[in-house]
Length: 168
Image (cartoon, rainbow, N blue to C red):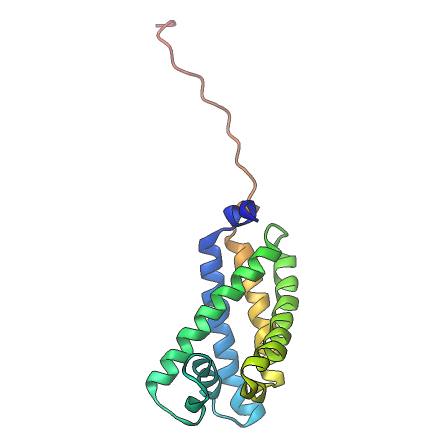
C-alpha cells in the first residue's frame, strides 16, 4: 500500500476531486429543482447536517450552506483519492468508465451505510443524486488520469558526448 500511495499523483487527486466535486454540485443544482421539485440548496444542507446535526435541515442561512460546501469538498477529495487508487495507471478509458462505476458504488455505499448513522439522509435518495455520483466518478477518474504523470511514457534522450580539448 505504501508503494501505491507513493506513486499516486497527489496534485491530480486534488484537481480531480475539486473538478468532479464542482460538477457534482452543478449537476445537482441544475437538475434537482427540475426533476424532484426541491430546493437546490437542500443537498448542501444535508452535507452540513452531517457535521452540524439534523436541526439544520429545516433552517436556512449562509453559514449552513458554507459548511455544506466545505463538507462536500472534503468528501469529494476523499472519494477522488479512492477512485484514483483504483484507476491509477489504467488509462483514460478505464479512468472514465471505471470512475463512473465507482461513483455509482459510492452512491450505494453512502445511501445504504450512511443512513445507518444518519437515518434522515435517505430522504435525498433520487435519480438526480445517482446521476451526480456517476458523473462525479467519471470526471474524477478521467481528470485524475489526465493529470497522472506516471502514465506518461518516459522520454529518453541520448547522452551528450562530453566536449574535450583533444581536437583543438
